[in-house]
Length: 241
Image 1 (tube, rainbow, N blue to C red):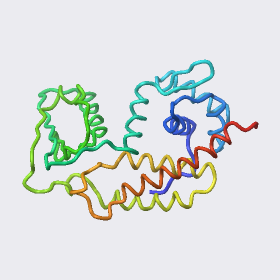
Image 2: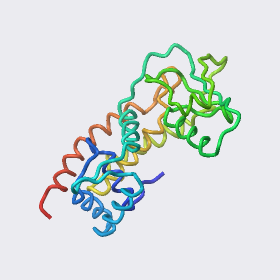
Image 3: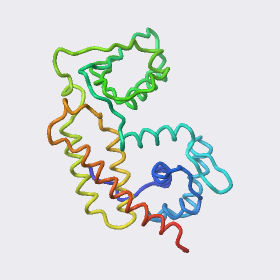
Image 4: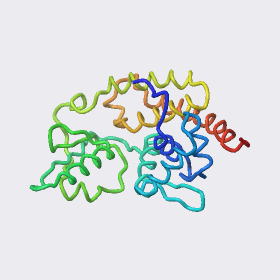
């Protein structure tokens, strides 16, 4: 998958705020980020108004902040950069849908929650992953629809659940893209692509990964890239126009 060579106003604003800590930027900075992709100031400001109306952003005195829902997404993004794992004893987490009647919205919410929790669907209504992630607990959307089981499969179901070869190939391509990234716009796009890809990392224990798994290397390269890029971007945003 190649990075897109442009972004919509909404995508540029979201990517900028998701990558900022705290996720709060003045409108003038968001306008300058939009300009990197040829987005006019008026278009950015219209997008900001619509995102506030939709509940994506909170506006306060010329600053825009991610809504609580998107702050949760940023937390997942941060976790994907620095995952909290624990030693694996061979146990798998299994969630089986046992609720008899579910509205389409409930089904969609469960699927979204399971993806965020990095479980994969073995078959319809049966989700699982190795029990190697540190969890504060299961969200209500899961406990209301599923029966939770700790178990040990007789065989390794990993190949049925995740395309590890595909993820690794894309990770290596992104490593090369980080090395080649030239200019603020290209760096912004590559950075966003890496963060999306890390969100898709199943974060499996080493026992289930190939020996040349590139997850740690991609994170290390991205951290180094991001530290340099953020300095350059900040200078661009704060320099007089």
